[in-house]
Length: 347
Image 1 (cartoon, rainbow, N blue to C red):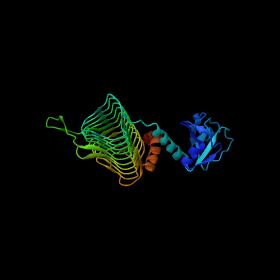
Image 2: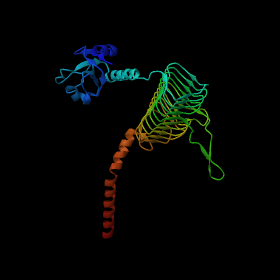
Image 3: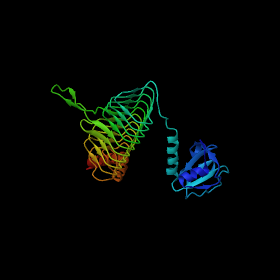
Image 4: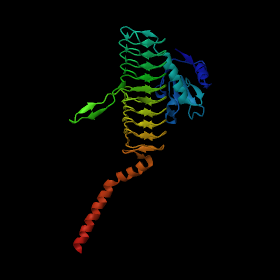
C-alpha cells in the first residue's frame, strides 16, 4: 500500500518540505533507507545519516535545520514530535496487517464458550469451557485458553501462549509468544517430615486494559484472590511475576525482572533488566530501579535506586568510587603496616 507525502503530512498534522506527491510503500531506519521508504530523525546523533539516506521521505522535528545539503530525492515532513509521529505510523501499519477474521481448522471451541464477532483463531488453538472471547480478538496457532477465561476486545494473543482457568485479560492487550498466564504460584509448606507440601493456588490473574506482555513471561495465579496487572503496564520478555503481586498502572519492566510473591508495585514505576524485587514489600509510585538492582525492603517515596541492596543512585555512585579505589587503599594500608613494623624494630 502506498501513501504520498501529502497524505502522511495530513495524518500527522505536519508540513511537507519538498515533493508533496512522492510515494512511499515501506518503512526503514534512516541509515538503511532506500527508494520509496519512509524514515524518521529524532535523535541528533543520527543526523549525519540524513545527508546520505536513500529514503524518499523523512519525518523530522519542526526545529530541524540542515547543516549540509540534503539528497535531491529526499522530502521532509516537519512535525512537533518526530518519534511520536513515527510510532503512530507504525501502529497504523501494524493494524493494517492484522489478521482477517477466520477460524482455522483444526481448532477447538467448547460449546459452552462465547465467541464474539471478528475473531481470528489459528490452527490447533483451544478455547475451553465457559470462556468468553471479546470482539476483534486475534488468537494465533497453538494457544490454550482455559475454562472460564475472559478475553477483552481487540486483544492479540501470539502463538504458544497458555492462559489458565479463571484468568481475565482486558481490552487492547498484547501477549507475546510463549508466555504463561495463571500457572501455579510457588507455594509450598514443609510438613513434620521436612517434606514440602504443595499449597493449592486457587486464585487467578487479572490483566487490565492496554497491557503488553513480552514473550516467555510467567505470571502466576494468586494463592487466593488475584495477581493484578493494572492498566497500561508494559512487561518485557522473560519476566517472572509471582503469586498475589500487584503491578500499578503504567509501570514498565525490562527483560528478566523477577518480582516475588505479594509485592505491591506502585504506578509509573520503571524497573531495569534483571532487577529483583523481594516479596511482601511496597514500591512507591514513580520509583526507578536500575538494571541488576536488588530491592529487599519497601520503598516509601519515589527515588532512583541502584545496587543490591538498592540504595539511592547518587549514594551508589559515591560508594562505587570508593570500591574501585579499594585495591589502592589496601596496598597503602599494607605499606603503612610494614612501616609501623620497621619503626617498632628500631625502637
